[in-house]
Image (cartoon, rainbow, N blue to C red; front, side, top):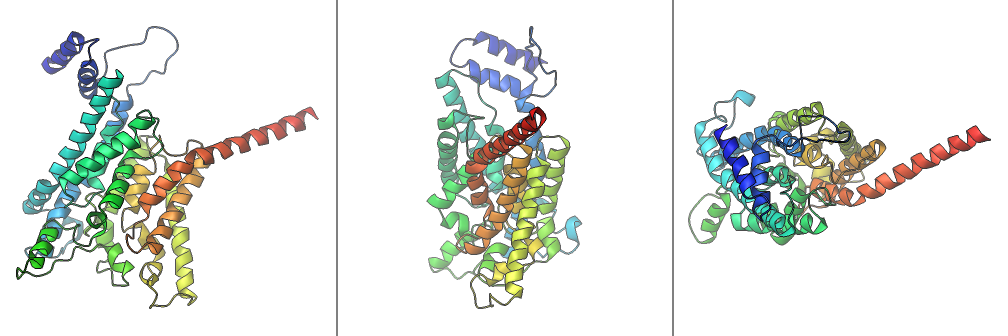
Length: 408
């Protein structure tokens, strides 16, 4: 109670000053607000926007912890100091303290930079515009470390976060007003501004980039490849991993996107807590499966031969697309963003289906960066209001027809 009282006293002391939003944000983040409404009819509930954001963060924490272990595991395997997993999810080779320490050493600074830069900008805008600090970046700050390569330079991340928060959200009016998902805006900035750090085959394994630089300088070292499954398939190579490895997440990739199992559990948690839309998740999966089936059918018909540069990804089993890359993570944690997604129930089905469909389409036909979920979600963010508009207009027309039928 001492900390709560001290924060409350500081909030009262600085009430009406420029720093009031900062102390109020810290107080309400840790504790429920002690203000109550006195008139009118209001919804009585124990949760608020901060509590909702914290629920989403809790759904992502297992992905973060797994990402730390996986970062260390991929490092040790690539450098020959660790053994390949034998024993599935409960393998001692994976859940070792050494793997955790290596991963934490690389990932925790990314987390600190993400939250540090993003919240600093949020506080600055709150002070300048004289409003309360908005809670929207709480989830974005956790998303960003999970969707970037483990070896991303921290200064690049800081620049991207600043761009994403200012250009992707604040210029539109802040939380609830943005038309693009801020986390995906940050990743898109990194992709277009620093493409080699988002699509290179070395960036997915800790230390592999430095190793590559030493080789270029003339050092006699074994070459390290941190190529993802999508990168291999885009070059018509074998994936090199079995289905269970892909499902559990024992593969190179962005920090928190590799484990489909944990993403699935996080999605179920969000659905159970009624925060994530099951319609968007399910329709995205259906859209991806349909596009995958179309490509498999094209390959089976003989229209695409093994000599084609698209053969590797087009011939991949249609349902494997759900297990590789960032599709599952994007579908669960970013496509369902309530601010940028469609709001109507029918619109959610259309919105989600098109995300899944376009994700696989871009993945196959963009070999330079074979990952389509980021661009697909950003594209559908732009069209979400249009989808809702036509859904609403369709409902209005149906009601008008029923009204005319009754009055005729």
